[in-house]
Image 1 (cartoon, rainbow, N blue to C red):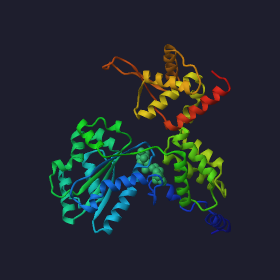
Image 2 (cartoon, helix red, strand yellow; image 1 turned 180 degrees about the vertical axis):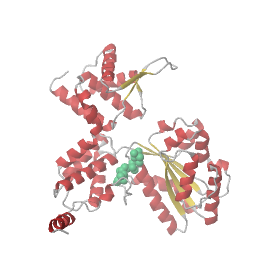
Image 3 (cartoon, protein in one colour; image 1 turned 135 degrees about the horizontal axis):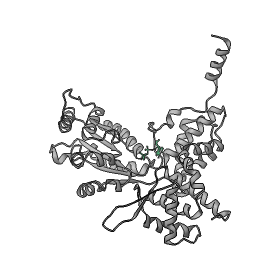
Length: 413
Ligand SMILES: Nc1ncnc2c1ncn2[C@@H]1O[C@H](COP(=O)(O)OP(=O)(O)OP(=O)(O)O)[C@@H](O)[C@H]1O
């Protein structure tokens, strides 16, 4: 090996890193603890405590609801990991499986994944979902084990697998009346509206035991970031100002999405940027650049948005807020108009008249900023539906609010 190459390798290998553990910031990583989710973990423990007091007496079903990045997956996984350990100290074999319904959208795939994760022997000959489920129950009986299964992104399953499949999973023990009930479920979804396509009786059954995760405030995100940063970076390579900046940007109370995934992603990207530059510390500038980097979707349409007039932006902001609040892909123009009036009021602007609002909506459509279409003939007649095909909406909302405030400040119309 040439001396030059040797030097390059040596320099690179010995270059001090700011990362102690980059893996600990990846989405797959399950943290040791979850600051600000203690109450929800306690609720889960309460719902599943029969597994260590009278296991098998009944089968529990809990619905875990919360917006994007509110820690649904992490809460379920951390609970599953620690509850199974606790149960073992009490002499009970409780297993945990986490099934993602986005990648397993049929009853067959869901049951197969459950069985695989619980180490149940999968017969080689083709079984039906129902037969496989029975085989799983037999295996749990024979090995005297219990299980908690999380079905993450359950709304995918609910919308694609069909009513019978959903009924089968949710009310399994009405079908298989075994004396000892070994399977328990956590159904995870973003909001209850997404489950409204279920049979009403099934929906109300699911809603009986519900835990709702609220978006994080900036103070909560700051605690989360402090904890996650202490695991990921060496001491002295970051400071609280940077963490606070990210937490304030993302905090729900400050107009952000309250999304821990975004906050952690920004921190990770800021760290990688600092490291690539050979910097010894993560600076505010790194955090700013990281935020810009993950808002690239907004940047793509930002030109059209920047050219929009003040009231077009106010309407757009109203639409974004409604879309976020309802979680629906489209919102009615009438509702947007009402929200627009509220937005105007809070920002001290005089709302425009109805016909003018309609014209602005059409302008936004022409500019490719929104999608607007007719609802078709519904029960209450035709209306225009508004949707936005890019995101993330939380960032778009923040972006719009900043832009609007700047426009107002300089007196632009
Ligand atoms: N309270 C917390 N403390 C530490 N880390 C957290 C906390 N809440 C969430 N996180 C982290 O934030 C990221 C996003 O969390 P998670 O995937 O659980 O959110 P989610 O609600 O399931 O999101 P989605 O709806 O997109 O599936 C993960 O990396 C998770 O470890």
